[in-house]
Length: 111
Ligand SMILES: [Zn+2]
Image 1 (cartoon, rainbow, N blue to C red):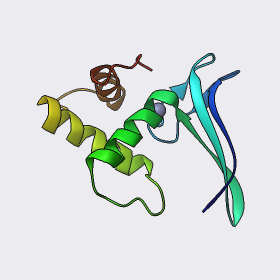
Image 2 (cartoon, rainbow, N blue to C red; image 1 turned 30 degrees about the vertical axis):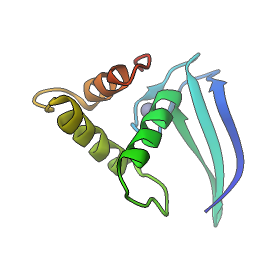
Image 3 (cartoon, rainbow, N blue to C red; image 1 turned 120 degrees about the vertical axis):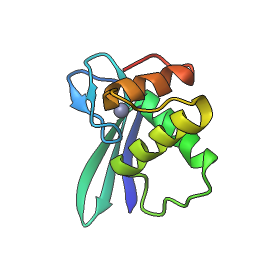
């Protein structure tokens, strides 16, 4: 998978969906946008905060993301991080609530 272009720390001019968490990147939010070529070119957009969390999950785990971290990997690591590092179980919370708890625990502004 080859990155053919990337735009980091850009402000959204319109709404997008984050490919890590599948939540909305709101107009004005900081995000990263990558273009990959893997057969057909495609783009991957991520909240700035989700990018930071994914770096943390990669550093915390010795797991090799040869093909990159998927949405499912991201959510799985997020839930493990909250449980193991903060003793927080999902219980009745939505994924968005869990993401925002993890983001705030790591010192970033909620999505
Ligand atoms: Zn996100």
